[in-house]
Length: 376
Ligand code: GLY
Image 1 (cartoon, rainbow, N blue to C red):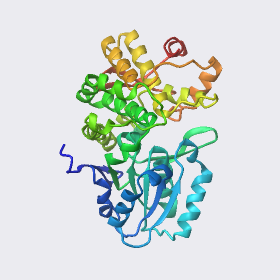
Image 2: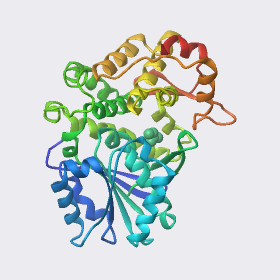
Image 3: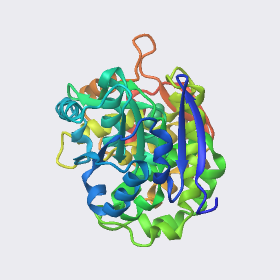
């Protein structure tokens, strides 16, 4: 991919157009997705602090009037009913009408929350997403899932409301922390595993360079030189293509989209369990553990080649991601699994189990004994 030419992937989700634009100046395409300017902006505070000039250019490229901008902290805690109400009050102050546009700029948590506000304000207004983390570029911003956390559960309340434009500008990644790179790699590896054997092979082939950049260091600090040292834009484009293809075929998650939950069934269990300790896992770390465990289980059962499982674990470790975790006590494990929001009353918990790279069994069953054996 040429550095100066944005790559575009078009989707039709619920009959509506949703376009992913990837490139160094993707933010300048904003006006295309705002039929009635000016839009209002909700921006992650770290992004606002680290990229003020670039944000100003993006906003000026879209409209020349005074911008209505709300700056919010990122992080999982922000996905709350209280924050949603704060946004609604602000949208009322800004007089956002039914034909208005809300632009969310930040990582997956901000975009989940802002998307939820856009989906429900005036029964749904235009939403444009500028993902600023790797995880949001390859996963969270695409496909129209929005959500907040409530009742002690992750994402139980949400609406499908695709962004009309998803503008992914790798420049924002220059200030991404090591921890956020690792989280993004977990979702990129997942996406390669479900739908792009060539991308997986490329990532695995690059594992020594990935390890040099990601396997150690302070998770809160940026990773100097990372953007220039590997073909990030190409990889993000390939992962986004897989995700776009899946959600285009199955927007409401009746079938193929469930493959995107690879590693997430157990991932959500360990993530929720870890939040009861003083060392909470990030979402990417939890998904990494979940993927490592299902590959081990499938390899032991002989339903997935052992060398594939070995490669997956090698790659996760190279990216500094965890591959095991202390198993919750039996009754806690059962409770957490039962609260999986993707479990159906009839079918129970259906696991995504790998058969090979690019082929997943979407109706897998896993016993508590297998989890205990392979999680610890
Ligand atoms: N992040 C999983 C999905 O979009 O379905």
